[in-house]
Length: 327
Image (cartoon, rainbow, N blue to C red; front, side, top):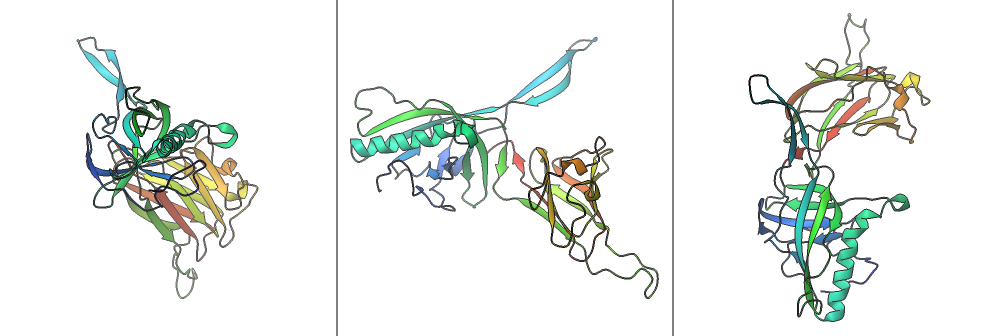
């Protein structure tokens, strides 16, 4: 394959390309790709390439680890009080080789940089995660955000460091859960409105866009994002059957004012954020302190989208990525 020199201008694989699958401990038959903070994709299971993961020694791809907090029970034993998922560490043995010493050195330096740049590649040198992506033979996939922790060091044995060497990399994941590559979406749009009195008293769908059943196919709760398209003056989102799980964004209380036709506002629930399509910060329009930017637990949830001041074309789009315990 062609020699890769810094800076990398051509990704080792193009977006959408998947390396050949191999059998990996804890997860089985899968293809693995590492995506560094610049978006460059590094295939890690192509055994014909000049770098690839060594299946023996891979760990940390299974279920998340938890810390259990308990209290003594007066009649003996303990009672579980709290469960806290812990950050995940993935151990990743990698072999690097080259046709000659210069080719090997270039690959070693470039791949090492791809891992370590997660610690300094953001604005002002802030940490920015890379992604470890796992794709199954049927095309479904999951990924997890990773930071380099340690391990990019050679074996230090005779004959290594000339045309080949291996490293045991530890990747740290602040969120221990795997995220689906494909988002789940729900779209609701206002239909053609009718006159309340013509030809007889009637109610249009201008406010309530739907009492909808939303399914989260993942293993743990997710925090959805909402995109509202105007016209709309006030928006209320409710998780039915969960007391207090509701919030309202009153556009008349924001610097933007009511949404006009075609204008948008996006509400992110984690982290809490409200932005207009032009970038205005509208979080002050939420009905604090009563607002609860609720999550979706695994399974089915009934949700209601309500828009005041809706007209034809008003719409709500709910988007989330299912999260899983394992790869």
